[in-house]
Image (cartoon, rainbow, N blue to C red; front, side):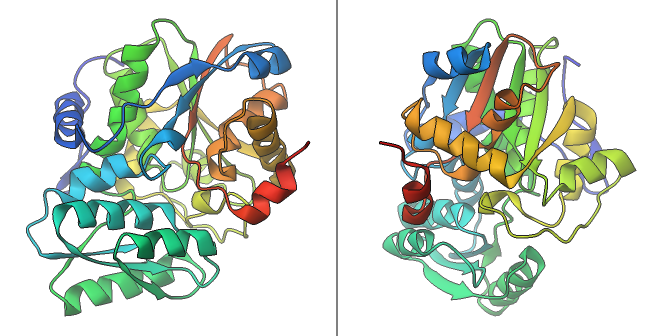
Length: 325
């Protein structure tokens, strides 16, 4: 699957390798080139060589800054609005502060309080609306129209996908030999960018999405060969429960990933516990989710596996539950 990766879908296209490389230059100096390291304790536990791409070491502790800054830096409007369960909102608020943009973030009524505080710390206005992604997106678009602001989609956007793809570029540069990359999947922006970046330059590698069993929007879409809207239940991995992929992220996943893996809530908590207590990485459950298939001895992943630890904004409540002294 090497070569240029660009496919039309109506007026929209996926970014190609050049756009991801351009995004890497655009975000330089703001976004960290995060470490990629082997966790010897996790390698011993799983029987594989386990490498962690530590996006929890970003300035805001989450990968979302990559796509958010790439997008916000390009909009002409003075204000931006986003809908988010937390991390995208933090990223847009942080980027807006750096770029001098007015910012409003619409969050669910069930949002983790620490994420609200982080958004407000960066100067954004927080609006609560409903429980599900459709409700908060509708409210965010309404606010954007009324205020002549740009709506920043959390995943179904070419510039956002290109920004997230810079994580894949770094993996390719930092590790010479690996069999598979496991990526947590919410709306699919991260895995879309990572898979485009890797499959455009490194054909043998396999890329798998990992999602909560209570919110299997990627699994359903790959099975039906189209975007499928589901009714996700609540999950401890609150960043991974959008009700559907976007048209762009579905297109990328249908072309460039090698499969979807679902994991239970118990497996996600077990992965979070192992990440904190064994790897000494303070990953939030969404970021720890890629470890879960290795702990359950899922086959077909190869011997050298990269886990994208997407974020470290772990709540105090979850941290209390997973810490073992």
